[in-house]
Length: 125
Image 1 (cartoon, rainbow, N blue to C red):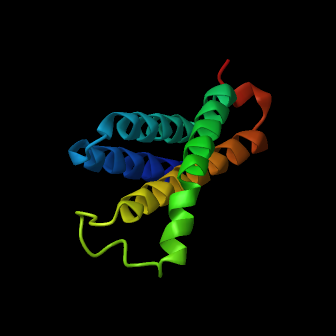
Image 2 (image 1 turned 120 degrees about the vertical axis):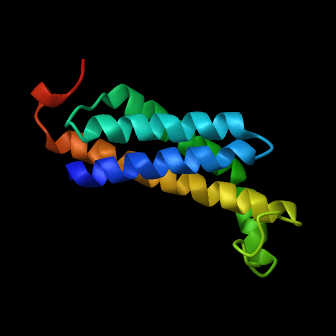
Image 3 (image 1 turned 120 degrees about the horizontal axis):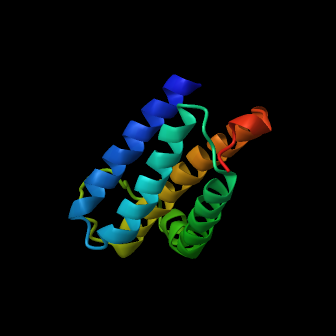
């Protein structure tokens, strides 16, 4: 799982980097960077559960705020969200953001479950 954690860390850093050209990059760069740091530390079997849980709760609440837009995307025929990087319809961009937050939440949940498998001596205090 160490290699997977390092791969996830690199992916999260790349995802954060690609957000720099977004109209609202700051929140995205922060959440991706925090997730990358959590994955990087996990690669060394170092976990800090309060930070993992705070990031997970943040990503889930943020994604919940975008759930209506995701629903609108589905109801309106689920247009392609990968065709153009310029989303002409607002719900397409918000759907991408929703799915990005689900990816972040999945990675954070995975790291939290990994931390539970390890003994307390490998948890950062």
